[in-house]
Image 1 (spheres, helix red, strand yellow):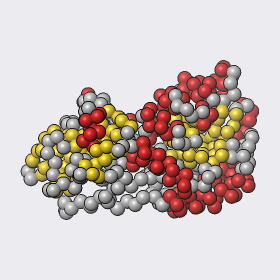
Image 2: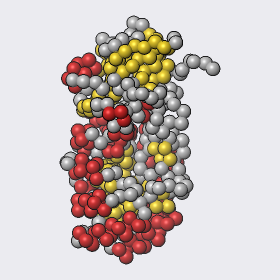
Image 3: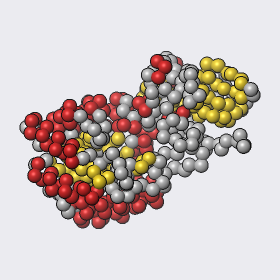
Length: 411
């Protein structure tokens, strides 16, 4: 079997000066000095702002952008995002508290996810947050809590559609799912909602995530909007909110190309004409997380030792899967593939070599790069994992083996 690994396409979102990565207007070396330790995550606020601006440029003006903060719930990131987008989606009480601390109006915050607890629901009801209901039982629970609080809850129905987002890395709709209400059950639920006197806002229809195929997203958007129009015929009041999910992906691995956002935007512009006619009061929402922050972040760890084992060089670092599970290949990958990884203070380097980058954990799963070609690194050099702004720290088992947690900075 060949040991040749496909090369990553060179990423250009961050500039390089004197062979050192630049982020947030400073060199990686200077940033590491400012942070005071490794490992750390760094998120570039300008890159986040530019990504939102890109969407505003190419999506129809009627589209409202919401940030799915599960992608990166760091409070400073959420605070920055609240100045850029039209709403925030949360998935827990902890995330809700972070969102409520921002300038975002509570009426522009939505709460999704199965298994919501009574305390979470009560907080959302009291704050005036829109609750995306995942089941008939949850609807009854919300109505009861609303009576106890003497508040009419704002609700939307999260729909499990009878289709999925093709070419999606993570399937969130179609078939049997723990998320949302099966589309065929929604009409009866809407009828019951009218009896319960809930404040119906609309629908949340989300079929998949991490998609790089414009054609797949175009098809999903068309099916989603058609489904919403059909379901609205049974709604107890006009649809005011129609969240068509997100699913916009970013390239991680060799051979992947960036999503054609222009084509996606042009298709939405065409579809919205019919939606406006059928659902004139509806506000169309795109809820995005990874696409907004993923490429704006890096993970940085430091080489502790070069180790040679039977002809293979290992760079042993102070970071690993306990900080960045996704980069280790243990967060949904079926076949492990390398994230883009470089020696951050020697991007090109005068010498190159093929190495594996590992962490300090006592498991062979602690692998950040497997047989990748990069600049020759020595102890003290810094390893950078690109595409680390989404599903990084909070998606990782930080308590594993009780190593210190990394720092997060927004620069």
